Amino acid sequence: MLLTSSQISMAISSSIVFIFTSLLFLSGYVLQQQTVRSLQAAIRPQPAVVEPPPSPVLAKHFGTPPGHSFFDKEDGRK
Image (cartoon, rainbow, N blue to C red; front, side):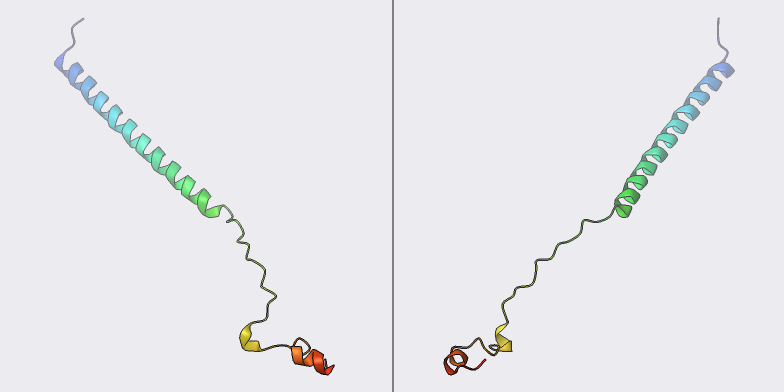
């Protein structure tokens, strides 16, 4: 069976259209998956940041609280 030039031309054209359509579909699919992953990462709750408890030590600029000084204990005052 011999093919005519118009049949060969039609086969080549159809092949080119099929290849580019497939590439366009695959690139859209990849782009969609990347977008879905980035949206999932944005929606995912962030882990809670645990801050260390505050230090019970009184800062120096507040001075010494009453009743905690050497002289307060010696005088008997509180």
